[in-house]
Every structure is written in C-alpha cells, then in structure tokens.
Length: 330
Image (cartoon, rainbow, N blue to C red; front, side, top):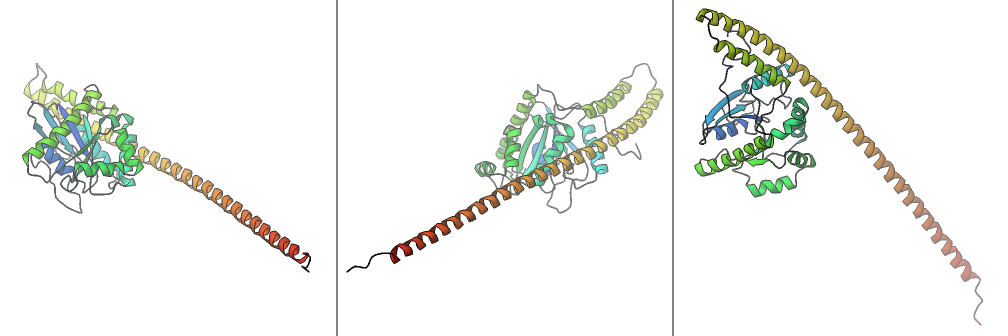
C-alpha cells in the first residue's frame, strides 16, 4: 500500500524454522544468511558502509521438507542507528517472524577481538526481550576460512571473561562458518552442524519459538487478515473493501507497536546506562579500597624499615660503646 512504512507482503507462509541474524557491520551476517540458504539472497560485500540497511527475509526448503526462513537485520542493537530507526526495523523483523523466532544467530568475526561493545549488544538484546531470549541464542563465528575449529576453541578458552560468560549462558552453542568456501562438502557439513544446534534449541524449548507480548499483538493483526482472506458469503467487492480497512488498521496498529518498541528501547538503554554507571562506581570503590590497602601496606613497610634502621643504629651504637669499655691487653 502506497505511503506505508511496512511492506504489503506481510502475510507470509507459515515457517517451520525462523532464524534471525544479528551482529555488527562487517561481521558477515548477510554472507552467513546466504550460506544457510545456499544462494545469494542478501547483498554481501566488504564495505565501510552498511550493505543491509533494512530487514530482509529469504526462505528455502530443506532436504527433509521443512521450510527455513532467514531474516537479515541492519545491526539493530549495536547503537549505530537511532531508537526511531531501530524501532521500525525491530517491528519489521517481528512482522516477518510473526509466529516467533526459533533461534537468534549472534554473528561475530573470529578474526576480530571480542569487545565490550559486542558484550553490550548481547546485553541490550537480553534486556529488551527478556532473559528467555538467551535460550534461543546461538553464537556464530565467521571467517572460518582463516580460523579453524581448534584455533577458535583456543581463542574462546583464552577469551575475556564476558565472552566466556556469554558462551556459558548459551550452553556452548557455538558454530564456526566459512562463507568463502566453494566446497559443497564443507558447505553441507557446516549447515548440518548449525541445523543440529537449531534443532537442539527447539527441542530444549519444547518446539516453541520465542515470542512475547509484541509478537502476540503482531500475530493478532495477521490473524485478522487471514479471517478476511478466508471469509465466506461475501462478494469480491466487499472482501476488497474489508482488506482495505484491514490494511489501514494494520498500519495504525504497527505504528502503535513501533512507538511501544521505541519506548522500550529507550528504557533498555537507560537501564543499561544505569547498570554501567553502577558497575563503574563499584569498580572505582574497589580500586579506592585496593589503593587504600596498598597505601596502608606501604606505610606499614615504611614504619618497619624505620624500626629496622633504628634497631641497626642502636646495635651499632651498642657495639661501639662495648668496644670503648674493653680493658687493654697487657
């Protein structure tokens, strides 16, 4: 529908598996999506400017007959876009994954140092969607052509504490992807491994995708559209008018949900900033105590040195006095 911020192709086929790719610019989200789908569904190239500037979805049918939907996102939670832009894209992502998300693929580069910013991205997602989202999260490391499995394992064992904690929270759900390989055996093997982890996530969650209040409201919008599409006893003209009204109402509702998402994003950022401030204050207090203890220790050492020096001087004085009082040998 013209002028809408949301796609008219909003009634999507029911997906057996829905995956969402999340990660920073340059980490290889789009390339990973293409590897999963087995075709160039998303634009992927080395660039200093983001190639993916809006949520996109590609689908394919697996050998076992299941449909897999992959949603590529433009760095929703890395704080490089405004809350307004992020809000619209998050709603668009949820609109595409209206039945819920089976797995969130957190994409990192195996050749880049895991930073505090990466950690804060995960923390933002966790605070925004709630702790339950961690149960659906898989860590995907790209550039497997440069870093092998053994090297990645070594890197993770020596990684910063916050990355090791993240791996632990995700119950060691870590997959290495080589998006440069043209070897069909390597492509098939890494996809099989990823799908095994996805199936494990689904099984651990009782086969239910992640969903929350926002997903529920979006699904209600889609369900009303289905009712109109399958309406019986109405003329084509009446159904057409009903669809127009549904589309208008749909846009209004999604706009309201977007506002709600933006507000939640702002609250999330405020909460994280407060949490960061508390952590910084706690660290400063700990450093202050450590410094005071060090100064106290230094003072004690200084006093001990002075006492030792004084004792040595007294001993030297005593020795001199003792020598001066000795009887001369005749």
